Length: 313
Image 1 (cartoon, rainbow, N blue to C red):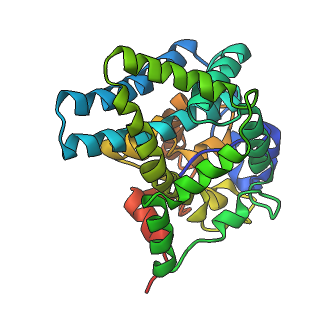
Image 2: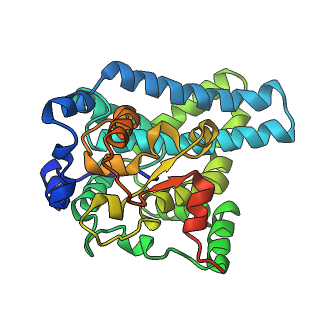
């Protein structure tokens, strides 16, 4: 994102770097240990923080029902849906929690369940992306090559997302693969969510989750993807600074579009074993030591991402 979000084996990433850009020339192995450290306390705090925003989004229109609060609720829920995706992403890397069992439990039953995503299937796909980033074998390369898009094409993409066409297509695909065993985490997590809302006397707000998924989450997800690799300066370079980006964001962009440090995608590709809650500090260290040099591997806000991903007139 100035863009950040994926993972290969640590050794394979290091060997991709040009000799003069070896990460070990900028960060010692001893220093790196501090960024690789996993913390259950930090993981539970992030889990609670995301759930608190989701709860607040449900409560907001109940406390003050009007078009503004309904819109804000849906925007917050769309952002937190991406936040949940970031958390199951880190669980897929087994780095959010300290223990593998917690990563599997929360990634499979809570984060993946709420987003109806199979942790195991996602892990297989995502690790392939990390393994082959910067090569023609990257499974995300075809999507990245759709950018920069013409203004007309970009307009069509955003309109499809914002009008629910992309969301309904995704939902239809999920329903076609539906099975009790495969979708058990989705059924359980959503039953819990709906049950809690019902006990609170606000069951109707559950509909806002699906409004957010259909009309907001799809737009946010597209912007996130564009920020990570679509605006990179050379997608087939072996140097992560060329094939991946990071996005420098404001507080409100973190709240609505880039939650849980997902914007530090380049840093994630450099060392996928670093938990998301350490990526900002890792970015600051590398910046202070001039690791990025004069590489154009940053975007400054998501409006900048959209400009980069759209062909000039």
